[in-house]
Length: 151
Image 1 (cartoon, helix red, strand yellow):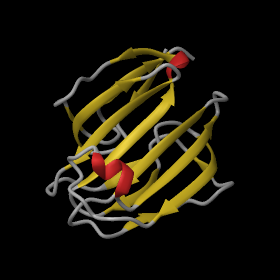
Image 2 (cartoon, one colour):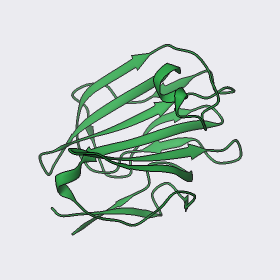
Image 3 (cartoon, rainbow, N blue to C red):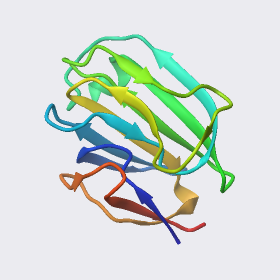
């Protein structure tokens, strides 16, 4: 078993279990540090940045329309994880510190996002052994275990 720690500070908005993927959605309130950490070591496979609107980050609609940065990492375990940073109504800027091909280590700071934002961690369902959090759980980046993986 491998524990996965929260990539961001805040609280869990949603836990989505789909046929092939599990997504953990974290809202980052104004008063928390807005650093985003990588959950596992690996190589950055893709960095995708999209300008968009600035709707309130507590709404699911923000995932579709707001400015965002998706960082996909091919982990040392051979599967991909994606960390999506979504700007909120106050946050107007996402700053990322990695590029495609960069090597990243577990819990390395890979991005910073402005205040009142959302982070989504998505990984293959097949490797998730147990989900340790539920909606409204408070999480701390690099400190709170959110998942156990079967790797």
